[in-house]
Image (cartoon, rainbow, N blue to C red; front, side, top):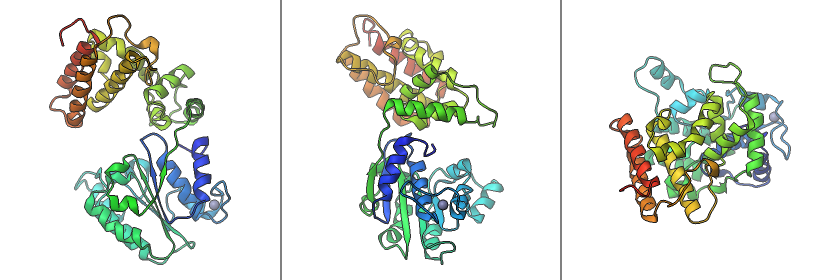
Length: 352
Ligand SMILES: [Zn+2]
């Protein structure tokens, strides 16, 4: 997400007016906390910053853009660093190149130690050094404690930005050392306009231009992502916009029929999340509210509506499934079981 997103630009300008050597940017996924964190780091390091942020043209900005700034340390899981093209230290890169081990999904304690020593070296470019940690909840207790002392008493002009999608999973000692900023939610129309521009500018993962998604597809994807634009954009950039949008529209009725093929493209964890959204919307309609994730026209119609008991049972089953969905015993069987549970919940005449 670039800072062409107006809701991120507003937050950046507000953060730049405030003092504080350590910020915690917190909110659910898809709101752009990494992009905002990086824009803040870029502005702090810039040689000619303005109230709107970094200048974008100086040597420092260029070094941030090509991921080689000597005064910026980005602390993230190895797997994510490889995916986003952020450099790893030489030893780690050698180990991964020689396939001695798989890239870690956690932030490793060695990486945190490297960051601590980074903060103690002489600065090489300007007067400020910045440590960016994302997603901060991927630090385990040991890693977080390694960072804690430096966070409490940073040497010289060291500034921290921690960005998280799960602030409650952070150690309280880490949270209490930072000023907290809750990520703002964009309104739906701003998010849709941004998604449209970003999808036109985007390239697919194979670098070929993407087939443009239609406005209706983008709206469905943004609904499906619960209004979180970066999550919706990820589907567009995978080249899955049309298929995902059609699949999303067909999902509620397919589940009411017990058609497991509607979950065919989903990982078990994604299937559970999609069904939780469906369950939410069916509840919302039952109590006279508005659905949030699906178009009302796509939801199963007809009386009688599912009973509160059926929906409560289904909610509980989905929560239990969420706990095993990352490592299912058998993915195919799990999707079958999720589908038959959904069918039972959505068809009140049938025995639960
Ligand atoms: Zn600059």
